[in-house]
Picture 1 (cartoon, rainbow, N blue to C red):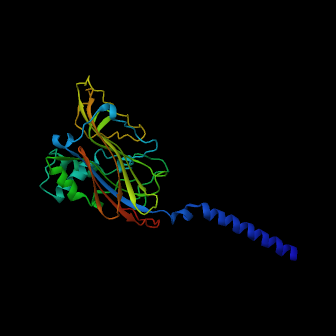
Picture 2 (cartoon, rainbow, N blue to C red):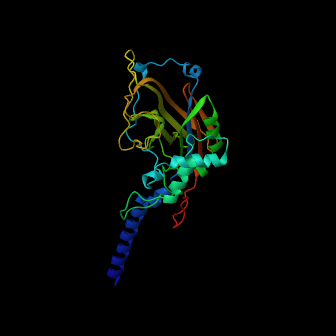
Amino acid sequence: MIINKLSTFRAKSVLLKFLGTLIAISPIGTMAQERWFQIEVSIFSNETDEDKSEEFWQPDQLELAFPEKMRRLDRLTDILMIDDLHTINNIEALKADPMIVPEKPQLMEREESILAMSPQTRKTNSGFRFFDFSRDDFLQLPPRLSEFQQTNQTLERSPDHRLLFHGLWRQVVTNSSQAEPVYVQGGLAYGVQHELQGSLTIHFNENQDRVIADTNLWLAEFSIVENSEENWELPIPPEEIADSLNYGTTNPDLNYHPIRIYHMQQDRDMRSNEFHYLDHPALGVVILVKPYEKPPLTPNNSDF
C-alpha cells in the first residue's frame, strides 16, 4: 500500500514537472511579455531643388544595402483577386474630400466593377484563411483606421511635396537584435526599381522604455540616358518580398539608369501617442507609434 502511494506521488511529481516545462516554453507563457504597438508611417519627397542641394551627394560615398532579414507588409491583394485596391482607397479619399482631383476619370466606374465582381480568393487549398486585422502582425490595415488621412491629403495637394509611401500595421516590438525590418517601396516604378526603396525597423532601446525607429531609405532619380561620369548603383530588392504590383506610369520597354540617389539613414527615440517627424533634404518621414492591446482569439474579431 505504501509502495503504491509512493509510486503515485512520484508519477504526479513527474507530471507536474512536465506540465511546468510546457508552460514555460509555450507561446502562452511568452505572450504576456509581448508588447504590441500600432505603427503608422508616411514618407514623402521634397520636390524643391533648394532642399535637395543642402547636402553634397556623391556616388562613392553611398553604401546601400537591404538588411538580411526583412519582410514586407501583407496586403489583401496577397489573398484576394483584386487588381487595384488603391483605386478604392483613392475613391474613399474623394468621398472624404471632394477637393481631391482623381488621376483617372474612370475611378468611380472601376470601383463599381470591382465591387460588382466581389473579391475572390487566390488560394483554394484547405489551409486558406482570411486576414485577421485585429490580431495579425505586419498586415496593412484598412484606410479607415488611419490617423494620417488629413496629413496625407495635405501632402498630396502640396506642390513642394509628394507622398511616396504610407504604411499602417501592428507588430510586437522587441530589442534591436530580434527586430524585423519592414520593406519600404514607393513612388514610380523604373523596371525592378522604384523611386523610394529601403527599410524601416521598429525596436526598443536598451532599457525598453522607448521605441526607436531606424530608417534606411533612398530616393533615386532616373533617366534613359546613362551618366558616364558618375556611377550610381542601386541594390536589387529581394525577389521574395519585392512588390510585383507596380502603380507607376513609366515605360516598361525603356532602360532606366539612376542619375542621383539621396540616402536617409537616421534613428529616432519616440514617445508613444505622439507624432514624430524625421527631416532630410530630400525626404520627410512622419511616424506615430501607439501601444496596442491584442484582443483574445474569437470567431469574429476581424476588422475586415
